[in-house]
Image 1 (cartoon, rainbow, N blue to C red):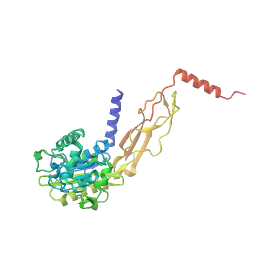
Image 2 (image 1 turned 90 degrees about the vertical axis):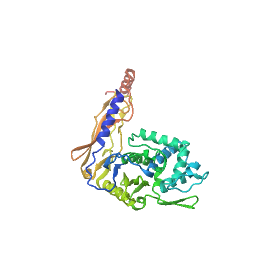
Image 3 (image 1 turned 60 degrees about the horizontal axis):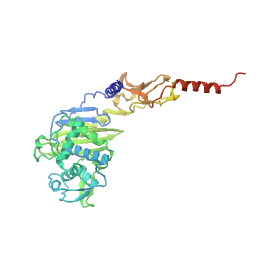
Image 4 (image 1 turned 180 degrees about the horizontal axis):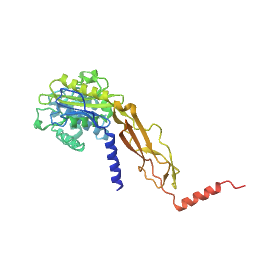
Length: 384
């Protein structure tokens, strides 16, 4: 029963904190597109966002996600040296022309994939993580299922469309936005996605970022371009301003210029119309006295303190109201809801966030209560 109550509270909180996107008065040339807030996952604009399309090298968002997760878990290390197999060296398309048996540092492999979309390096990394590209692709599809990506099926780690079963390699703008959001949780990836130009092989091979927004769009943080004849020009773009990070995905564009202009238009719309608001109350939550408890006071805390997304026109009218009792009575369980923080704007509820107990406090036993009363009596001043 307790588990169900917690679940329902969390569900209620999620629903309250997810605003309905306003009707976007924006036109873009991209046939399929989406704009998503990175912090909350709120969709701010969509156009054929669930249409299944080939993603070209934007596939590598998933490839990079699995590499970063393997690094974070310790299954592979930043200090590793990655060796190119015959299969990796044979990859076509964008590449840095690895030779079979060539060794390169993890950092240089990642840079080559992120900056120059190197298919040979993406394959070498996939093999380093999973042993073979086919085993890695199985992990890609398993991870997609874990994330609830219903439009996605991968057949390779690169997005090349000249390989067997390439016609089955499909995803959607929505699913790629979810993947991009997951990848951006790994802050270290931005050490690479924000690079405009760099080199590998001790400065002997130059890298130039295929994502032109990195140089020309304020606050750009990434993320990945793609192109094949079947997929057209694709882009998963991210940018951060004033603490808000947005993700724009555009697919199947007719030209490189079209994809960048479409993504810029989406990002501009998001930054112009939305902002993040802290859920912290205007004043710190007070200590609450606890009667009949093993501790005299309890410190309340918010169940979650993630910011909420609001329309900029609501910023000036935002109000935060804390509803807490003057005191509590033991026993109290950690995480037990004891109050509510309500956030409103123009009379509209934006969020209702449970205020919970930061720790458990047991009820005094009869013996403990007796000892406490006797101690207080002994400390009382004698009557004159």
